[in-house]
Image (tube, rainbow, N blue to C red; front, side, top):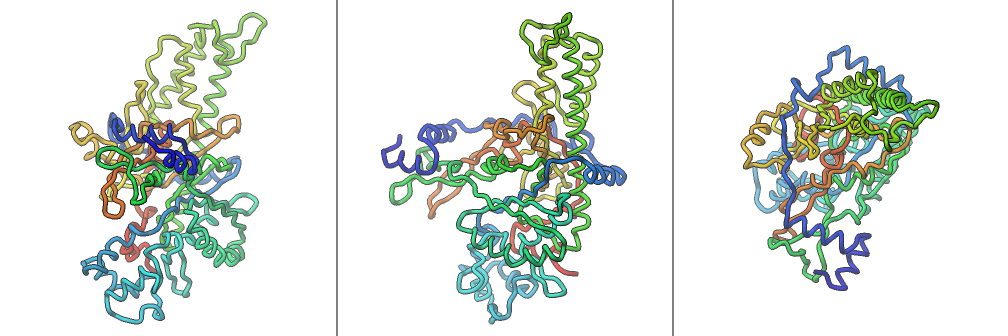
Length: 513
């Protein structure tokens, strides 16, 4: 399949031919559809917090023992999709490009020294091209999103710094941010940081520790043509593409802190919205820590109960040393009662059911395996018709069930039950996550062990006008976290203010009032 030149190209990227061959084979066989048991709703699968519960969760976060906190911000790639309609407007005016030009003075990046003409085409050119702001080739993080009454202008990245000082402050007065970027954009991000870092540190009494990290090229996937043959560029070399945000599980795996907040670079709003944003982010972190401590307690109780059950004479067999123990494990009433309690908790809180087991030994092992996993709490907003994934209860291969975020491309359009579940979904995934990355003994989980490799998908793309198929790795908040313990919590729509297109910046959440 591959020439010597191909192999050299593959290995230069940190990959190997066997991996790329497996990617080509995946295009041929596809990915299995996710089997949906039901949409996650407030009736089953989505927790709706009362005002008291929100306050209690935030207070729990403020008092809990945590081995460090960090904010993880996916910010890779250019903002080309944000300006798609404007680029089209350079060729032929359209409704959205006309609206943009008519409202140019309402954008934070408006500068009369740059926009010297009222001509719509000129305004588009000055926005997108290097003769003006060059926004068409820059990453979202360094674009000016908000302008304030006192004249201050903030990029999306700057707004994340402001947010971090509020709800991601460590006890020592630091705030840790891990920002995933493209290598070619590093100078832009470093300049954006340098522009505000000293001022914000003095203003807010904080010290920022910002780490820029790259999506590893070894995680890029090969593209194929319509015949599922490796796609070749005009010079004959293979075309590799970034494999979606799922590749960022490697970056998240490198984070040292225990509690991590994940929020996309474009999901920020005017600072007047910060109180509600911070309130709910603290509540989500409190929920994650409450869940962490409950699970840790159950694991310790389970170890103690099972250890007692296998005590033989004066010899103590360590908990979960199963050799020759057989079905007598957890045969005590105390262990049996505890297993029942844990299974009820898993089902009620996390929609996790335990697969059928033939012995008590198998049951305890299955329960413990379900408990001892990374934790994620995902904020969910009421469905407003935004494109993207949603929360579902799915059937696992082992016969159990779990909560998962699914993209529409993972749902079989020819399955009436799956389509009905999709249509009856009440909530949308805004990518507002809190993660606990350490186990009950304080050790870091290896997050790569909890990825479902079968949960990726294939998408249609183009390269220089030629159609191709691209392979998306299991998404960061989809298949890459498939084997995590998951809690869905309803959050207010006010906390979700993404900027997917430039016209979104005209929405009230991004304008000074």
